[in-house]
Image 1 (spheres, one colour):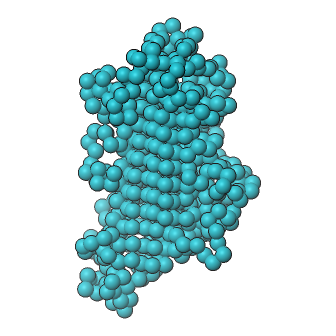
Image 2 (cartoon, helix red, strand yellow):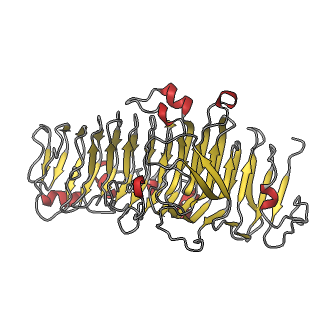
Image 3 (cartoon, rainbow, N blue to C red):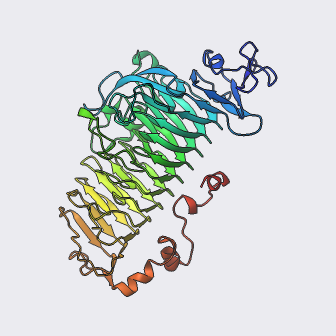
Amino acid sequence: MDGERVYYVSALHGDDRNDGLTEKTPFRTLKMVSRQKRRPGDKILLERGSVFEREYLHIFGGGTKDHPVVIDAYGEGLAPVIAAEGNGLWYQNYGAPLDSPVHVWKGYVSSAVLLYDAEYITVKNLEITNQGLLEGETLCQGDRMNRTGVSVIAKNKGTLHQIELAELYVHDVNGNVYDKHLNNGGIYISALQPDNEEETGIARYDGIHIHHCTVERCRRWGVAAGYTYQHGRFTTLELPDEIVSTYGSTNVVIEYNHIRDIGGDSITPMYCFRPLVQCNISENAALDMNSSVYTEAGEREGMVAAAIWPWKCKTALFQYNEASYTRFNQDGEAWDADSGDGTIYQYNYSHDNEGGCVMFCEGESVNNIFRHNISVNDGLEKSGVITPVRNVDAHISDNTFIIPEGVPFIRTGMSEGGMLVENNVIINKSEEARTEDWHHQTEKAVYRGNLYGNYANVPEDDGQAQAKDRTEAKEWIKGEAGIKLYERQTGNRPDIGARFAPNKKAELIKNL
């Protein structure tokens, strides 16, 4: 395509008086490329080894399917660093209150990288941070600055296509932990009310691909994709395909990412149609969800977070993910099928999550499937393994639960939901056989054909139950955090969790 442009930027030996068109004549600062309107085929290349302190890269407009805009690194050495340190301010306004009156829906945001109404665009091979306190600012204050590593916004261009974020290292983003749906955290993608929707169309996404990124020490979110001003269309129990695919985001894939040390939630697709979330690792989520940090929420509430979960999605598929060490809070689970339709969790591996393994959350959580997962040491005595909170249903089948001493199967004080629990292996690790309240606060729990190891009782309604004593159960839990249990059953190493997923790529192994 005639007119395609390549711009070079170097903090090492650039000069803003240069034309920026060759490696020998690079710009010095990012403002030289942030000021320009992007054209299809543009490339912005940042020299490796560069550190752009107190700078930011904001992109308006994008490419085409055949001629995408690419932001990448050039040269040798470490990835170029964009360190915003609270710069890069823009104003976020959803155009109306959000799905809860306590959520903040407009305000100033600092983003190190901002893609605003940009499509057919790839950003890769960068290190991005946005930390540092302003004078007088504290980490926990209620009105602290909203900050993002990478923000993506759809507003006045209708449906945006092909947003790719690849091999980014996003870290130390000290956002506002209370403003859940302003763009706070590592990577946050949202859709705002257009100035003239009748003219430009519904603001949404068709094609988001976030992969092979490392996101750590960010607050509030690790990765969030899809929150929309159209949330009022998603209030029915079962979500019609046409509604979700028209007003929500489609072709959303989040895979091969490593998310750790996050103030709130690790990965959440929101208002998406058939999102695929696979081969990701979450470690140490919900670090700020406690009364010593979460001190100035006011009316915003929201001291809840889990690791990897959907919000108001249709047929979300979560597979081959791992989640561990999520901190206790009102949620605190590895997985959470929250107020959506048709959520599927399969072939995932969780361990040591203080809030438990999985939640099925609230009365608009329906058609849930939880199968072929392994849970090891999830839950505390004050929580539990499964949290069915007033949900319509959940089919929990063919999973393995290795449960620590003193931890109940159903979470204490949070139940009333429906679930069919069948063909699972449920093992109690304690020295003594446990007497379990299998229907804690819910008569909607049904058990069928499960194996119960080291329990003094089995559910009365499980006429096909298999009971194993501690000697037999002990053999089942030997090995690598429950993984060898599958080998014993099937004779094969299981394809489960990100580290064991089939067809995993070298980049994932490199980042573990």
